[in-house]
Image (spheres, rainbow, N blue to C red):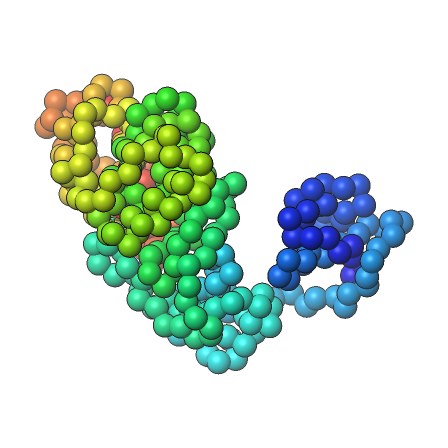
Amino acid sequence: MRVRRVGKEALAAAVREPWADPSRRPYVEGETAWVPVRDGYPCDDDLPERRPYGGRPFQMIGDTAVVRGRRPTAEEVAAILAWRRPACVLYLAAIEGVRRLPAVETLYGEAHPVCHHENGLCYRLNPAEVMYAAGNLEERALMGRTAQEGERVADMFAGIGYFTLPMAAAGANVHAMEINPVSFGYLAENIEANGLTGRVRAECGDCRRLLAGTYDRIVMGHFDAVAFLSEALAHARGGTVIHLHALGDVADAARVSAESTGFKVRIATRKVKKYGPHIWHIVHDMVLS
Ligand SMILES: C[S@+](CC[C@H](N)C(=O)[O-])C[C@H]1O[C@@H](n2cnc3c(N)ncnc32)[C@H](O)[C@@H]1O
């Protein structure tokens, strides 16, 4: 494969150059990137063709590879190391409890805080300490596109800022609540690192006690969120939109809860990702009137 060598920081600009071949993926190692070159343009190097990766699926969070499902074999870990050269390989056996804590085993290197870049934002976290759901990527981006400049948003289960950051970056004023002090520490770091301090009020504690005033939009990004709906409705008004996450369809329970509080409600239901056999991670978008 004919390539030009550029610094990693110059990669985004290089792939838009006329000489860059958009049909092939650049290759990055450390601070250096190799960008495939179209025929007819000069190159720096001719690298051997890479075979497509056919091994065990994994997710890169910053420089750390995370494997889910059954425990990977030594050969599968070796294949991941050869393919992506991660600094660390973690086996994520489960995500446990109300705080959604990862149960992990370190299979290579040492678990450490990473900086994960997504949709133009930097999320700092230690994947061995707090969860980062790969399958929620589009939902995080959608919240960034949905939030309106100047609207007042409650993020009741903020974690490290999965939804808070994209919504604040879109111009919303976000009240972010998180009960786990470890996640809260990363949330505070991430607000600062992304230059969003003026747009976010972050508080560590139980969202049921921290909700204050009324909100234009309320994000309830927890699978047990329906149990918290009456508290959210106490801080809503006609026109408020609630994004209610759940495992499976809880629209009927959500409607009963909203109507018993005196609201009318329109509910649109979206699938985020498959969570298990016949189980879907669902979001109900509830528009109150
Ligand atoms: C990490 S998950 C958030 C997942 C995220 N919305 C996503 O889609 O990737 C839920 C978060 O809610 C927090 N949490 C659970 N109960 C809470 C409560 N009563 N008040 C505030 N935060 C809570 C957990 O600690 C956890 O960080």
